[in-house]
Length: 386
Ligand code: ADP
Image (cartoon, rainbow, N blue to C red):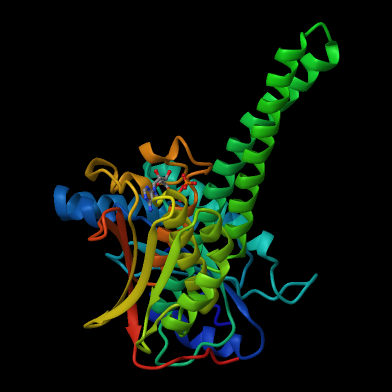
C-alpha cells in the first residue's frame, strides 16, 4: 500500500481522488470495506453562518475524524476527505492476519466509534454507512461509492428503528395477556369476569400476531440500494397477482375488485416489492371499503411515471389525516372498528420512496379513498445482471 497516503503517515486525510488508484489496485485482489460518514448540517451552517463558521466546523470534525480513525484503524488503512465537503471516507485496506476481509461486525464497530467521536466533538448528528467494494473501475468514482454506502447505512437505521418500534409495541399486549392469565390462575374471579378477561387476552394475542406479521412482511423487503437499482416489473402482471391474493378477503366482505390495467407499463421496482405495495393498498381498500361495495385498481403512464391508483367506495380519509396516516403505527379515525396495526401504509410509503417514487391519498370519484402510488416508468423490463 502506498504509505504516503496511509492515514498514519498524514496529518490530514487524503483527497478522495487520490485514493482511487490504490483502491482499484487493492480491490483487484480482495474486496475492501468502504466506510462513509457525513455531517449533514455542514452545508446549512456554511450557508447560514458563513464560510468561517463552516471552516471552523470542518477543522474540528476533521481532527476528530483523524484521531478516532487512528485509534480504530490499522496501518495501511486509508482515510479520505475533500476540503469543503461534508463526507469522510475510510477504506479498510490493511491486510489482516485472522481473515482476509474485516467482518461486518468489525466494520460497524469502527464506523460507530468514529461516528460517535465526531458527533460528540461537534454535538451534531453524523450519518454513516458502509459497503463492500468488490470492484472499482473508472468511470465509477469514490464519491459515488460513498453515496451508496451512506444510502445503505440509512436503510439499516430505518430497519433498526422499525424493529425497535415494533418490539416496543409487542410488550403491551404481552404484559396484558400475562396479567390476565395470572389473575385467572390466582382464582377468586367470577365466571362473567373470567370470560371477559379471556376474551381480552385472546384479542391481545391476535393483535400480537398481526404485529408479528407486519414485522415479517417488512423483514422480507430488500430495500437495499443494490436491490432497487436496475430492476423493473410489468405493473399489470403484479396487479393481477395482487387481486388473486386479496380475493378471499374481498369475498368475505362481498366486495368486487376490478383490475383495470390493460397497458403494458413497466415500473422501476423489483416485482415482489411492487406486489407487496399493491397488496397492502388493496387490503386496506377492502378492509375499510363499503360492505358489498367496489374496489378498483389501475395503472396509467404519466410522462416518466407509472401511476397506480386504488379506489374504494368506503368512508374515505379526512383531509387532516391524509399526511399522518403514512406514519409508522399511525391509525386513522376509520380504524377503530377494524383490526390493524398502522404498519401497512408506512411500508407502502417506504417502498414507493425507495424506488424513487411517492404515495398520496385523495378523494375517490367513487366516493371513498383514492391511493396513488407514483413509480418511475421504465421503457422495458429489466432483469438484474447476475
Ligand atoms: P392499519 O390498517 O393496520 O390501521 P395502515 O398503515 O394500513 O394501518 O393504515 C393506516 C390508517 O389509514 C388506517 O388505520 C386507516 O385509518 C387509514 N386507511 C388506510 N386505508 C384506508 C382506506 N382505504 N379507507 C379509509 N381509511 C384508510
